[in-house]
Image (cartoon, rainbow, N blue to C red; front, side, top):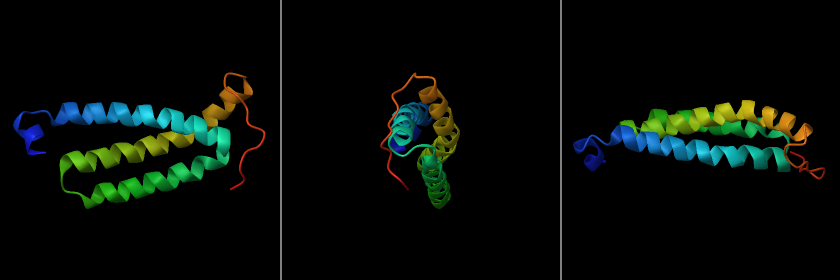
Length: 102
């Protein structure tokens, strides 16, 4: 962490981490809708709340920010799982008729 601060790389590191987190959540939404359906929205809600609470626990700006990005990526995924359902209905993604029941 000191290296990032000393060389003014914190912003770049946060930007890269944000890019990777968003890239991770895209397939998570697709898989959640495929295997669970739109009922998976509450999993993203719980994850978002947990990440918010974790963000509040750290005084380190880098770590706190990453948990904040994870939190709001989770919250955005709630919207995206419903949008994914629409994309499946349009035939843009495969439909799974054997979804798990939560």
